[in-house]
Length: 240
Image 1 (tube, rainbow, N blue to C red):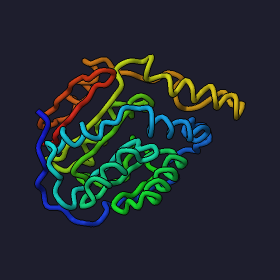
Image 2: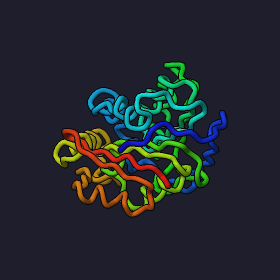
Image 3: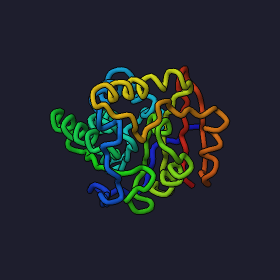
Image 4: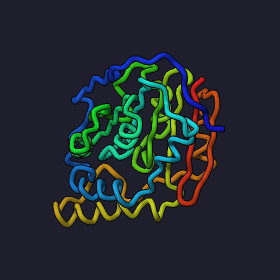
C-alpha cells in the first residue's frame, strides 16, 4: 500500500544541486525549446492533474513534516512543484528539467505566484548532480515518454532518495493519446523553424503494465505499489 508520512529529521535549506552545464548538450535540437509554449500549455491545462493523488498516496492526506525535501524530475513549467510548494509552505521543493526554456518558465510562474519555497534548475534526469540520499520524496509525470534510458532513470531516482524516502511516478498507458502532444510539437516546430530533426521521438514511449512494474523492481525498494486509473498508470515506491 502507499506509504504514510515520512518521519526523518529535516533541515530547512534547499538541497544542493550543483549543475554542470557542460554535461547538458545544446538544447536547440529539442522540441521543448523550439515550441516550449505548447508543452507548457498542455501541462498547465490539458494533462491530468494528479496533485490530490500525489498527496493521498504519499501522505495519506496528512500534511508532510516541516522541512521535507521534494524533487520533481522533468518538471517542465513547474506544475507539480508549484502546487505542492503552495499547498505545503513548510516543505522544500526542487524542480529539475533539461530544457532551459521550461526552467525559465517555471521560475517565472513561481515568482508571479509568490512561491518562495521551491527552486528550479536545469538538470539531466539521467545524471542527477545531487548527492546520494538528498531527498525525502521524488515525483515525476510522463517522464518515460521521452527519456531514452528508463532503467538508468529509476536507478537515479533510487540513488537520490533517502532511506525511507518515496517516489511517485505517473505515466500514460496508451501510445495514441500520449503521442498527440509530441506529434503536434513536431509538426509545429517543422513549420515554424523548418527543422526536421529533434532528439525527442515523434511518438511517445508507453510501457505496458508488466514492463512498468518490472522497471521498478530492478531496484531494492522496500515496497512497490503499482496501479492503473483510466489512461494513466502509477507507481509509489518506498526506499529500504
